[in-house]
Length: 333
Image 1 (cartoon, helix red, strand yellow):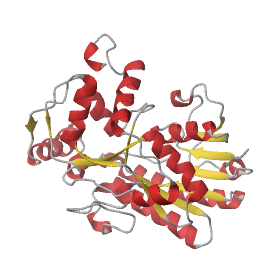
Image 2: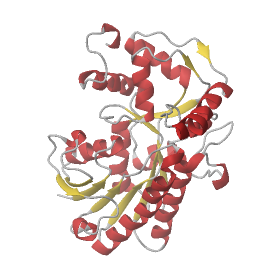
Image 3: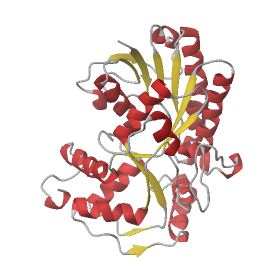
Image 4: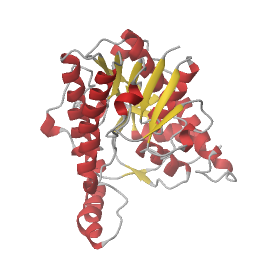
């Protein structure tokens, strides 16, 4: 029986990776900041309390067959820039060094399609790379730099496979993620309008399986996009409308409106002590359709491609069962 060490195990992708590994007869050791995170409740895992800079990482990693480095700091707020860079770049460097010193045979590094960037007017695959200067915001830049750290480690002889998830959707979105927030707002009837953007969706359980398959079949130093279906935001809302019995928003908002709203929040209201609810970087990111081609992972890894509409329905049901939505409202069912 193999043993995996999983960072970011309490997060959305991480907890699904843990569940997938357990279902395939792995022992799992998890790195968590606090004991007993809700996402891991009831799972037979060994917990290591700490973070990516904890002094005992080398010992914690000893005896493991694989490191799944899923942990990342996701924030689009200007105030979090330094922490995002430290965690996603230097944290990656530190955990890879610890795995190397502990003799872990193989690492799967979770990057993101954010590190690849957006290909205007087409699909981006693993061979495409936006120039660093055109990556929007510190989060995307941090994921690019973190991936470069993984590539450098692979070039130096460490066995590291890179996966680039697109936009996972499904159960166990505890925090929830920005995409989960969109699903929740729609299900609550709090989505009166939309912007013209698009995403590549994947069932988070397929994304989790992609991590395991990357360990089993991936080539050292290669990147694999873990994605499935490219959909416009309105098309996503059409699917959610069938699931929740809500109406599809009728109004498309010009990009300048949310840009102005977010800029006022971050540059004028935040310094006065008010908490803005829309990050400027999130609006800037939505200006392009974030579409990707996952055929390489499907072909080389056997990445599953389950119906994303089912994943959306499962996300709504999970939110309902865990108290994020009002269970008395029939229009969530």
